[in-house]
Length: 546
Image 1 (cartoon, rainbow, N blue to C red):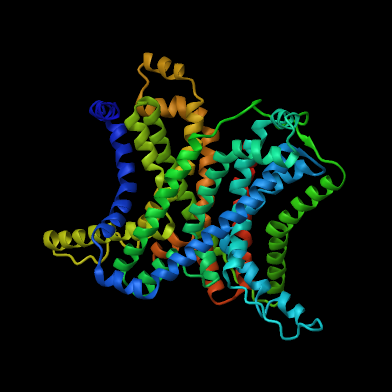
Image 2: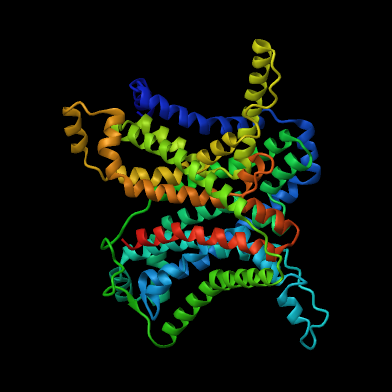
């Protein structure tokens, strides 16, 4: 039954100009993925033999332990905090509801260099520790697996927290009361009733966490912890072997695609149970006495460790650098970062608006699949996307140079490679999902009767978008625009691997300074990134409170 249905779907898919443009956007995502998979289908035996003898085993082991550790820690933190703020009532709950999302504003690589700068042998913590009796010769090695798991968990647990909190809020207290009347203890009711019902939400959050963990480049670089992302970078820029980088990227793509499927599977199983917003004050579980104090202290401890103390440490470093007259001027990096963010957001949101319009005007299964594929770039790690774009761009560049030489006898040199166009293309592919998500949500809220009324007066296509849709999409477009800007501002591997020579951004500057253990000088650009990243966090908080 499925095969004839799919065949009929694509037989009736007759694209017009708008749909052809949407197909082109989907093709932009398909090309890097196809290039990476092509390298997997045609393996270089010498490269794989070398990788197998040197780094492959350690990469797989490190990636396994990192993902396992982060998954366990984010589950424990996210689910417990989601339960407390979503289903319980205790002093400070309203404050912690939004404060617990603030660690999302700190990029993992910023948290990593703060931790290493404070906890390393020459840092203030171990220096103070060695002044205590009995600890004079104590040395704590901080660049180890448990510590990087801790650092990444502190920045990624909000993914699980937000989704599990939504799940628990949807359940209400009636289910727990029913479980208690059947003789279950509070702990048994939680594990046998509330937690199983929230499992799809939690699994979806964990899939997002694992995507971010696999894609991370900055934090693992600071910890000198080799994973596939750092190996891809070293293979390309250290050993100058783009083929080796592509071979490694193919493995990472397989992991990322599996996570995409898992996330989509569990997201489809999400259901609201009980009342639509079961987390009202009347239905919350009221905590009193020692339980209330413990809940408040636990939430405050997480907020302090994951956000307040790191930001304070950055401020201290900035003040110290300013006092020593060693605080550099980052105006050029700030201007380049903002310029890239704004231009990338304009391109991405324009493309997202086109996709959303095609999906609205032709709601076929083919167009739905087209939109889903066009937004899958968010699951691709930046290092993978950089390799996947570089190879076809280099191929096209060589042919353009040959064409110019044959037709006009002009030796042009690189035409596309090493330009801002390549970097902006990579940004658009990578961050199409957040732009499309916010715009499409607003587009779906527009009544179809408006389109029908406009068509009566002959208003279609671009005129329909500009005169009818755009005024009603301002909020969604602004949200998508801000989300894309902030993602671009924080993005490190794509910028580092595709930027034109000398085109440094704040993220690249942080990478260069932290590579030399210049923690104080990296503090100011890190603060810039955190303040910029707070904006989408606020948007998420407002959305979750609706």
